Each structure stands twice: as C-alpha cells, then as structure tokens.
Image 1 (cartoon, helix red, strand yellow):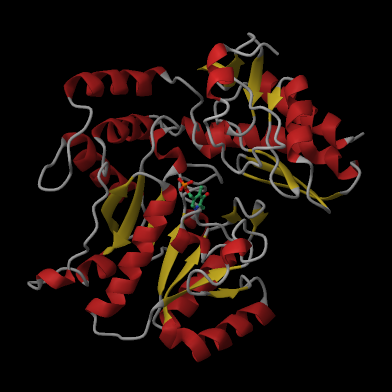
Image 2 (cartoon, rainbow, N blue to C red):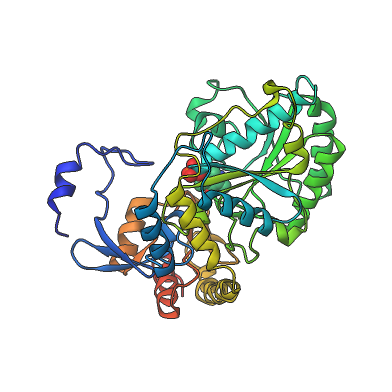
Length: 420
Ligand SMILES: *Cc1c(COP(=O)(O)O)cnc(C)c1O
C-alpha cells in the first residue's frame, strides 16, 4: 500500500472514531467512490458492504443527487433557519410528512442522528411539562439498543454492550428493560411501567432492528406491544428509525411492517442518500399541539446552527425522488435474496451462533467478539470493505449493488468465516 503524502502528514493530527490510536492499523486511504465501490489511493477498488455506515442507500455519486447538489450550491449553500425559510427544507418537510404514516407531520431538522434523538427526548420531556405533568423526567430504553454517542443518548444505549459503560454515573440513569418479545417479558414490562411509569416521559426503541447494538432483530409484535403499553401508562413512544428508515428493512419505514406509529420518529443516516449530514425529529399532532400555545414559554427552545442546511435538504429531496418509482423495493428484495443465498452456509463457520437476514441486512453472529482490525484487513485483501462490530460480521450494502458485487461480498464473508 502506497501512502499518499496527506495521509502521512495528517496521521498524527486526526483523532479517528472508535479507535485506540496507539495500536490500530492505519486507515485505508480512499480517493474516490463509484457506484457501490471505494477507490483506494493505490488504485484498488473495494466493494462497500456497509454503504458507509448505512447512509449511501442508492450507491455513491448518484447523478440525480449530484445534480441537485450542484444546482443548490450555486444558488444558496446555507442560510440560518431562525426567521428565514427556504424551498429545500419546506418541500422536504412536506414530503416527509406525506411519506410517514399517521399524523407524524411536524418536522424538526438537525444535523446528526444523535442530535435528533436528543431533540426527540427534549420534546418528550417538555411535552409532559407543557401538559402540567410533573416528575416524568426519565426514559425507558432497551438492552441491545443504540441511540448515539452524545452524553444524553449514551444513557439510553445498552448499558453493558454499549461503548459507554465507562461513563456510568456521569449522567442520570435511565430505566433499561428487556424488549417485550414474549408473554413473560411483556408482563414484566407492564409491571415495570405500573411501578415507574410516573417517572417516565417516553419509551425509546429502534423498530425491528437494534443496529449498532449488534443487528438484533425483533418481531413487529414487539412494536404493537410497546404502543399498547405506552398508551396504557401514559408515556410517549419514540421510534429511532435512523438506521431502519428509507427502505433498509424492506418497507420504507420499519414501523410500517408493524402498522403502528410512534409519537415521535427520528430519521438520519440514509436521509440524504449518503451525501451530507442531516437528521430530523418528526412529531405527531398530539406532541406538536402540546407546544402550540399563546405562552412563549411553551415553545421548543432549540435551533442547531446548521439546522435544515439547504444543500443537505436538496440532497434529501433528490434522494426521495429516487424512492418514488418503487424500484428500490425490488432492489432490496434482490439484495435480500443474495444475502440469504450467499450467507446461508456461514452456519458451518467456526464459532458462528447465528445467521440472520432482514431486508438488505445480512448478519453472521459469533459466540465472542471478533478481531475487527484483522478481519477488515482480510476482507480488503478479498476486495471487500466490511467492518465487523462486536460479535457480528454484517452486510448492509447499497440497494443498487450489482449482483456480481453482492456475490463478491458474500463470498468474502464465507471465506473469512471459514464456511464450507
Ligand atoms: C447511527 C445511529 C444513531 C446516531 O446517529 P449519528 O448521526 O451517528 O449521531 C442513532 N440511532 C441509531 C438507531 C443509529 O443507527
């Protein structure tokens, strides 16, 4: 591997994510993207098995999104959102409200997933305050969950699996429970809410897939149970669709597989088709109406500097255009079938305890955490960009990944896993 001069010069200054800087292997220098491939500095191409942390759902450099960005950057890259309005954001809000089921109609924009979760949490807390309900200051979240890396979102991640156990005690503890997967855990959650519901503002869950917590799947029934228990105990329900939103699980939003709607939903990752950071916390009419008042003090006092950035909103609108014809759904099915066929035999791999596929997500789980850096290097030798997480090796490719590239990805996983 040749080392470009910028890599060498910057290496002692860039602090990398999730990285022990002393011992980690150097990162792979990427100079361009093309379709669902990364082009490395030495000219090699890797098929991207992760769509860049689940963002680039249409593949890289999509001409329609690129064109929208070029047009927007010449017209207006950014203006503040306080007191000003612009077409990309207003169109996007209206489109998101139309696409989301139910009356999830009130869109608050931010830049990152974690921040949108924090905004959803703040909305839920103030919803209770504005209605004159005191003492509902906590959140109920689930083992295996992941909602971000900022201080408040760390408190609603899985307390052990999460990367945040170091900070236990720094922030107020939340209520962490098991997902209600069966009659027993459902009864336990009902009891927990009966006892502590008066302290809880909202329940937070990633619908259908707990992503960063290990790609753990649950049935749509879990979401129906949560909706029922939230209503019974007077707490709000927040769906974090930052990973699952925009087709990843086979429906446009994961909640649609269950036919239930939350009071607030958070969106980010694939919102701009993997081009620019943007997120949204979208509230239902009930939540929004608790802020609608002649009392200025009832307003939501929040407004990130780069909120509703016009470039990011233009990219999101262009990405939504690509969902209009429905071809994405056939593509997700095609990817899903390739993952089923290509990963099935991983069951025979050493230390493999589960193989599971949902939509365009394929997961091979091991009994123990894997050596992430070593595996990344082996995958790269095989022409694939795959970065395992904890105990799982997983694929979340772009929906547009070509059949032969999907075959390369699954073949690389089979080889590394030692499957027959
Ligand atoms: C990635 C993710 C987040 C955090 O988003 P960032 O943009 O990294 O802050 C929150 N929730 C879920 C479900 C995610 O997958």
